[in-house]
Image (cartoon, rainbow, N blue to C red):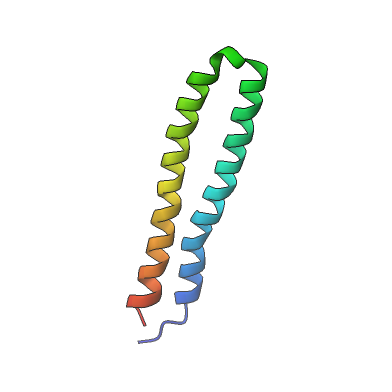
Length: 75
């Protein structure tokens, strides 16, 4: 059995981690802009930001772990 498409699959899984990092950067930037505009709402903004970043980070971890599983178990 050949695994010629395995590197492509691993690359696609790692794209999830790359785009999650991009999304986290954008979210953090928007949150800092929101706090700069409305400092009195910083508590709510921070709470929502941390929740969103946690969910985004779990997506990145799932993509990375899937890539590692593909890399080490399918050779």
